[in-house]
Image 1: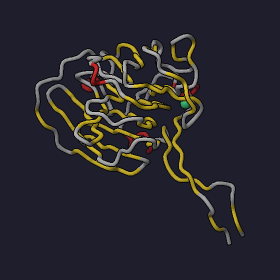
Image 2: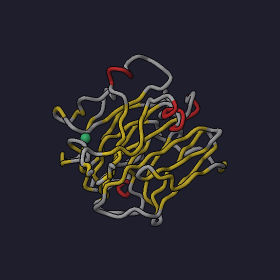
Image 3: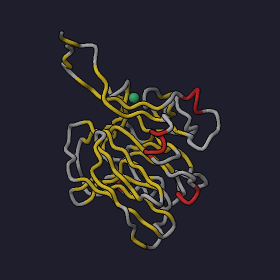
Length: 240
Ligand SMILES: [Ca+2]
C-alpha cells in the first residue's frame, strides 16, 4: 500500500522553445529571475524594464521582483495592438497567471494592468479585484481572502462567452458570467506590473511578483490542449 505523505501542486507553461512557433495559444512568460541593468531577461516580452528601485528577492521559482509601493514598477511595453492590451483582438480568450505576495494591502494598488481595453488586477475596498474590459463591456471578479506575507497563485481566465473567472491557488473564487456596460476606461494598452497605465501614486503596489504568464486562450482551452498544466502531483516521499 502506498500512502501519500505530502502533496504539492505545480503550474507550468510549456517552455519557450515550443511557444516561439507562432500559434493561436501564444504565451508571454516573465520569470522575474534575471535583469540586465534594468531590463528583464529570459523573457519573450522584449521591452520589459523595471523602474524606481525594485529589488530582486527569492521568489516561488528562482528570483522575484519586490516593489515597495513608492514608485517601483515594471513597464512591459506597448501591447495595445495585441489581445493582451485590446481584448477585442483575442481569438480564444486570455489567461493571465502570476504569483504574488503582498507586503501591504492598500486601496488602489495595482498588481497588473494592460490598459483600458485589457485586464487589470488591483486591490479595492478590501478585495482583490480582477477586471476584463472589451470595448464597453466590463467583467469584474473579486476575492476577499488576500493577506500580507503569503504567496498566492492568481489566475484570470476570460472569454466573452464565459465571462471572467478568478482562481486563487487553483481554486475558482469568482466567476463573473455577465458584464456591465460602462464607458471605456481611458489609458494606453501598455503592460504594467506594480502600477497602472496612469502611474498614479496610489496605484503603486507593495508586493513581490513572480512568474507572470499571459496566454492567448481561456484557461479551460489551454488545459484541454495541454498547453498549460495545473494540478496536484505526488512527491517522492512515500511510505509503504
Ligand atoms: Ca522567478
